[in-house]
Amino acid sequence: MFYMSAADVRDLVKSLPAKEAIDLGRMVEEWTAGIVDQKFEAAVKSGAFDAMAAEAIRELEAGATLPLKEVLEATLPFPQKHPTMR
Image (cartoon, rainbow, N blue to C red; front, side, top):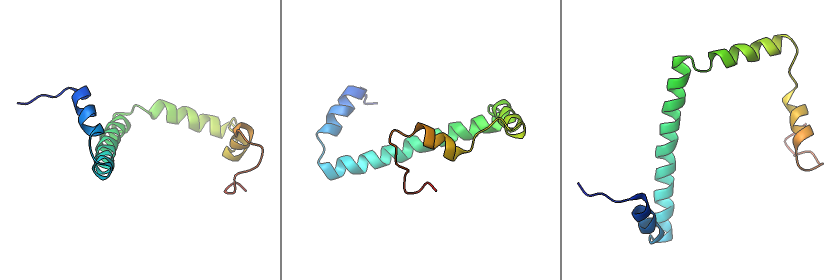
C-alpha cells in the first residue's frame, strides 16, 4: 500500500488547477459532513443529549428562557436590525 502524509497531500492539492481544487474541496466537505452527521446521530441514539434536553424543557416550563429575537438583538455587533428580524 502506498502511503502519503497529510503534508504530502496538502502539497499536491495546492498544485491542482483551481477547478479541480474546488471540486475536491466540495467532495471533502460532503464526506466530512457525512461523518459529522453519523457521529451526531449516534450520540442522539445513545442518549447523550437527553439530560441537556430535559434541562432545557425544565427551564422553558419555568419561564427561565428568553425569546431568540431578544438574545440576538442584545448580542449583534451592529445597532441596526438585520432585514430578516421583525
